[in-house]
Amino acid sequence: MASRKRVFDLLRTIDKASCQCPAHSYRGNFHVSNATPVLDYTFEIKNSTVRYGIGVTQEVGLDLVNFGAKNVCVMTDSNLVSLKPVKSVLDSLTKNGVNYKVYDKVQVEPTDTSFKDAVEFAKKGNFDSFVAVGGGSVMDTCKAANLYYSDPEADFLDYVNAPIGKGKPVDVKLKPMIALPTTSGTGSETTGTCIFDFEEIHAKTGISHNALRPHLAIIDPLHTFSMPEKVANYSGFDVFCHALESFTAIPYNERGPAPSNPALRPAYQGSNPISDVWARFCLQTIQRHFSQSVYNPDDITARSYMHLAGTMAGVGIGNAGVHLCHGLAYPIAGNAKTFVPKDYGEKPMIPHGLSVVVTAPAVFRFTAASDPEKHLEAASLLGADITGKKKADAGDVLADTILKYMEKMKIENGLSDLGYTSKDIPKLVKGALPQSSAYLTNRWMVSPLGFTSEDNPKFKGAFRLIVI
Ligand SMILES: NC(=O)c1ccc[n+]([C@@H]2O[C@H](COP(=O)([O-])OP(=O)(O)OC[C@H]3O[C@@H](n4cnc5c(N)ncnc54)[C@H](O)[C@@H]3O)[C@@H](O)[C@H]2O)c1
Ligand SMILES: [Fe+2]
Image 1 (cartoon, protein in one colour):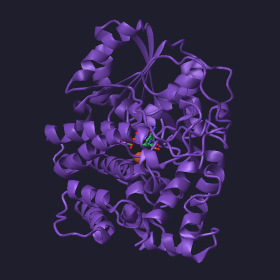
Image 2: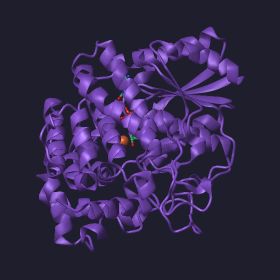
Image 3: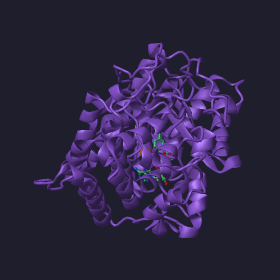
């Protein structure tokens, strides 16, 4: 087992790299130049207003009236537009006399091109507010549309995370946005991030700023009833990894340096007593309700708890952060060529939740040394019997627990199931490092493991372990 110091060195390296996982971080815009070189001593929790309840969507029309909205842009995708979640939102708007136009061309796993299409739609509409009804793809597209609608002269790359874009902080006032998630997964309804595939470089990146957080997240479990089995399954594993990664992230008071100004404190502050509450709730919820919610879609209790867990894990990661599973997911998702998952359309792609969980057994076997008690506690919250287990067993216990979930939920196990072979390892390594050279200033998981370049056979070995 790796030493605690070695694991923390690795996690700190990820933390220091300015952008981390583009899906969940927005500190890339800040440059902490004069920070005091000591560990941080504080943490804070930021969030959108969250309203939860079965049937709560009926209130959305009144919320818009309360905002003074006269002309609303409703965004969704071509599948959801004919389903109940969108219908119930539009019914509430109509009932409350709110004018709206619907944009239903959101692309699943959006790209810069699809973002720009949504922006063009928004610019033609003279809208005073935005409503997103859908999964992470819809909510992220709506955030981008609101941003570029509110700053019509901006060049697209102005706000994109540096170094791909200019990483400009958002200083224009955005229109009110309400997010109604229909998957139980990304937590995008509470985060200040929107993710897209930047086609030119075949890589995912994002736009990140606190101002992008929706003003209100309306969490209505009724929206999950139409969610297909595979979407419920893979998005549930996104929640699973959000909870595990934020729970095992570096503690906030072991991350440093403390910023010289509180405004510069990063979004990803490390695990803390509040995010631990979210994570524990989510892990317990997964143990009690995940499988039931996927295989018994009419079980309102199970679907409701998983929907709440998706949001709560989003709040946890939005403040504590995620780590290796999410970082490694980018080359895994970005190089998908042959894998066509059921319920996601016809194009090859690897759903986000699958791309993160596939490395989880290897990741947590490695990170256990950083805090064996917490890794054992996580396994126990997920249902493992940890009686008599020693600290040295923590990595194996948690890894085995994760593998049992993957088996029970009948999801792909390992990169080979996703169409990769050992020949792809250099490509995956090359794609992981850039999340080093493009985003992570060439430090992604390299030096703490003793790896010095993408050609280092040990680094290839790390991916090989995951492939097997
Ligand atoms: N902004 C963030 O903080 C954040 C965090 C994690 C992931 N993401 C991004 O979110 C995207 C993935 O989002 P997702 O996993 O929520 O899925 P998604 O939005 O891509 O949707 C997947 C599929 O499920 C369908 N669907 C969704 N809800 C449904 C429902 N209730 N009934 C029937 N069909 C439904 C959609 O039409 C689509 O075909 C990725 O682009 C990922 O990068 C963003
Ligand atoms: Fe995620």
